[in-house]
Image (tube, rainbow, N blue to C red; front, top):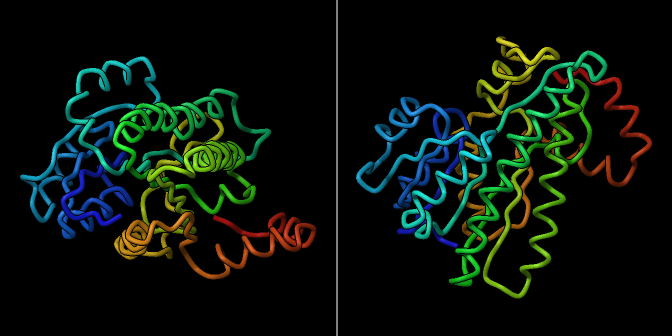
Length: 265
């Protein structure tokens, strides 16, 4: 699916990977619908676009599921134009499981999984009506294997993979595609905003995150994956993603020992 002249809806568009994707899509001639919780951040991203006359802003909170119903109903006409939904918005976690309050797990599921599912089910009806569309899901390497200090985050990402792999199978006779994107360490503020065991933001950037891939490079890879309708793409250093996923599949016992003794911060 080529993005030129397509309407692309990007969640989490106010910063990081979402913002980088919007800039890359804009350069390719896409029409953009930018969503996130902070209107000012969305307006800033919009101001950076190659052509912001071909864009619109739709603030929303993925954790407010009842509020999402109102947003979707109110903007039905605009959303019916969408050709590609990029499910990017989400929050991470940095805490040991036994030090993490249940409410933190609940919020990770509400935002990273249920909010994403709600938007996707809504768009699925439109995609099925025209027998065309694409879901691009910005998951994580933590959605391929469990990662220490991220038990709730990994759990929510695993759930996303199960959901979208299932609907991909259901849609195999249609022109509706699913692209799962699994980044490793990307240089964004995701670790600063990650929830600790109490639910407060960590407030600091992980060393691995600080040394991660530039989001603009990730955006270019994602756009190529959209162009060729790639079902899944692993992004990041070879050791942290591709090799890790391969070892976890082929030698699960060996991988369990490696991940248990790894420094992922």
